[in-house]
Amino acid sequence: MNRFLSPVCMTLSLAVFLFGESIACGGDTLNANDISFLWPLPTDSNAAALLISADEALTNGSSIWPQADFDQMMSIARSTAVVDGQPIVFPANEGIDTLHSWKIAGIRIDPSAPGCHSSIQAAFGETPQIRLVVQPIRLETGSKFRIHDIAAHLGFDFSTTPGNADRVKFKAIVDELVAIKHAIQAQGVATDEKLGVHPGFANPSVDLTGKLRAFLQRHLPHGRLNTIAFMGIRRPEPWIFFVANRNAAGDFEPLPLRTANGSTAIQFLQTDPQKVRPAPTNSQFGTFGVSTMELMTALNLEAEAGLSPVSQLGRKLKVREIPDVIANPVLSHVFNTDCISCHTESSLRSERALPPAGAPLAAEGPGSRPEALPGDVWNIRNFGWGIGSGNGEKRATATLRVANEATESAEYINRVYLSPPQATGTAPPTAAGAITEPEGVSHALTLVMKADGPIKYAALKAKITQLQAGPPATNPIRIALEKLEKVHFARFVFIDESETVMVITTFDDDFDAYLDLFVDNIGDVFDLILSHVKDAPPLPVSDHREEFNEFVRKHDVPAVGGLYSAYPKLRATDIRRQAEESTD
Image (tube, rainbow, N blue to C red; front, side, top):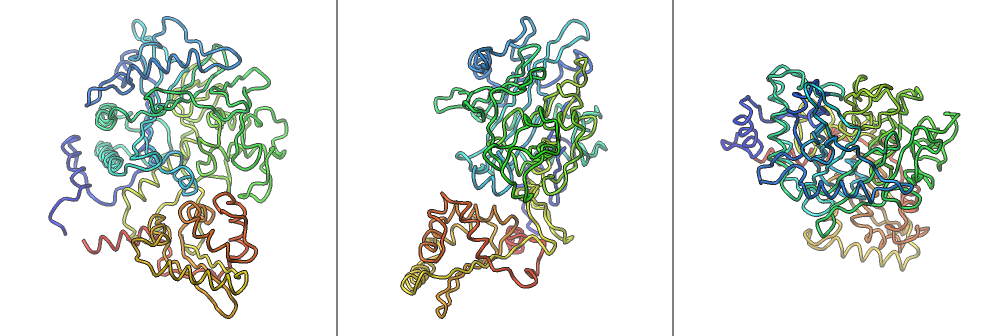
């Protein structure tokens, strides 16, 4: 064994000093409750005052929510976030304009926004985030206090460039989360349960608020706050949502949402027949997209939703299945789902008495604790303090959507940042919704194509031979395959007698996501190949993904009896990691 401490162990040794607990190196894994912290409702004004305030100082002298950014967002809420000519209206003398009144109700750690699945990463990249849910509380005399049904979602990015994760900084975040988990376990608190109020808050000796306050002070440097989602209410309704991103000038600028007219705000009403204005225009599966707006007004839940056939089902979606799609982070994310659909998935599921999601639309994960699920249609909180009953009482809320996201995020952190040993022979966790087969996590592709005549066959063979003969450091195919980290083996085969060219690979996980990654990284190589073969799809493949996928499926020759693998539960990344460890 190396006599020097690894960087991970050095970080955890620091955590021992900080938390005063013994921490073991290696084999650590996190679950949904280790990366999602939902505070219980404060019991009185004294408890509310002890919560983490948005104006608390960081180690660099800034504050969690800088005052200038807060003032700008409040200005946007009063002017730019307007629907039907009417803005959000904040009641006077309630402390909402005071930054100190805004308290952290929840913290979420996301290793890859907008999603962890490879198909989403291929389109949008990988941006780790710390997300804070903050809500204003008015502290009154005595023990009285009031939690307002208003919230802001602060997104702190940890990327080197847009869409490229700063894995060094995020690894430090992960290591401290492991340390916090160990400190909680040392006090007899288990976290491996359904998502809801974090179990650590039930034990005062844990001092979870103190640990999380120190965690934020160390990991929220100035300039990382780049996205703010905001929800306010114009009493008694509607609720108004808007999102703002930091622009090149350093200011927050409201973004057009997924609406028919490109509005920068969208509103939700309970008593208005239209329910949502302007109408959302999502595009998960077809022209009309998926939205809970259709579920709000549908009389027949078994009717077909207004969508094209869904590839996961081989048929059109039923209205009752809409919440299943929205709760699945592989199928829905911020770039194809409107704010209101995401925030009403669980409350409408409860109101319409819908059964739990079933395969293939279900996301893997333990879900939320029953007491945390919104039982009232007026509760549109995803993770925070929402309305708990018809009399306006509040309850700590965690929706199924958030539970699925947290489970997927924890699995991704374990696989990418913690890499637990595979000594037990069990497969590493997969992203929710990923396609796996009984024999293992790897799959075969045998793409057989006929050249468009002898001249094109000879030209293609010469070009591929020249490309493959170059140094590995300059070979674009090898460079792309190294970047994908999903391919075990890949080769080109030419059969002169029949003027046939084959692309043969063994890859991990989802087939469609694999093709998307190929298009994004070496689409030009496929353009070269397909320009020489018969019945080729339209080119370039980057502009005709569906046609390219259909072509590959049509010309993929399946193996007889499936794929044999000597290591059916190990991905390419696992094998490479174990090989590197064996040489240490």
